[in-house]
Length: 548
Ligand SMILES: [Zn+2]
Image (cartoon, rainbow, N blue to C red; front, side, top):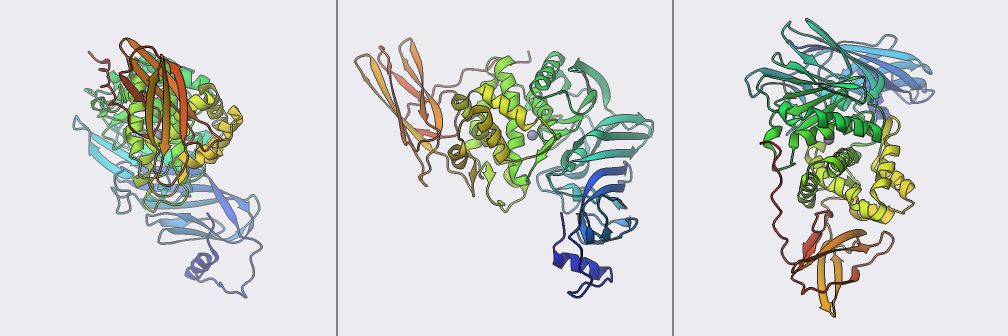
């Protein structure tokens, strides 16, 4: 982030420096990136000591801006003037090409400060877990790191991190990266693979956590941190956790954050959160069987995918939020479909469609929705995996989708929804512009297509016609299945609205000798479209139970 000239002048005036048209002109607008965050945190007092290392990218004379929603004390930056004006932290002076700079400050992190994001746990919380033990959570989020101290809140930035937590002798403290736990001090470091502030600035603690080795897989030791009587660990079969870790590592690359992965449970607002080398899971996950068939296992798989998709690679813009959730959901789903229990993937698909049909915002908004990310991002969890990936399976093939995801996530950096489109096109050879314009990009609340099916039976054949309509006249490329039933006969037919054509009808004629009794459009709940004109869908079969 670089200050505008007006903001730059305001900062200089605050510092008592000259800022007028006849002041010595800057040689260029300087810029510097935070490359390392040092975050010292006292668990009891919530006092933070923050040290940022910056690298000059663009030399010049002027100011570079960072952000902090918290009042800073002892703010200093050797060789520069450092000041805070509201939420802006300005470093002013001469920035030499390639120079390494340092900013340090102290601050007090409030319990859920007034700027905390509604509906989230972002900030510092101290809650009792279900067994009455104290759970402390210092949680950042996309563009929310200023709630914890000085930082660059840009979603696209990756950096190294070192966290140093002072605590009581009974506290068990977790933080991202490699972990060194001493009796009253726990230090964590992310000095290899970089990570974004949204997930890497984090501390979680509970004195009652018991560390239990779970499984070794793909060169990683998975360990569980749960209080006695906790119910999540029992819902995470070690062999299946290990098999998924091996599978996702083979799909993408070796685990990017060391050789230990910690899975901890507590009273978290979200089902899970993807801190590098640490996954936080809600202690209530076993109660959410109406969502996913095995919600704890699904949530862990989802957060594990984020180690690559969200942590090692980050968002080009907050508006690109959907791709990382879509990829986490989709890869968890592919595993469920190929190696999970009967019905497991189908329940995930049904949840996506139920959620996605009610999406209040486009998958990738073309403009700021005007509400906080925490308000519009829930729209992406169902619509995202369907529109960005699952609906493309019949059109491109699952192998092409997996090839595209491997390429998208192959190296660290920031990624956009457009990057995903380009990788899908590269892997498949298809032109997806019209598809993405219809299903993905938009302003305001999306209007999905309405599908209707008609069936005419004559001389042992059924002619099916599927029509699509939408108020704004958008044509949606898609492939949709139709199921025919009559007596003991059951037939599935796929009809396509091709990627490049603006068709409103698709037809197919298939042999079907039995008297037709039922026609079901999209029986496997694979498209976001609303369906009318079909006979009622049969009731879903009872799903197998996992726990006795
Ligand atoms: Zn997620």
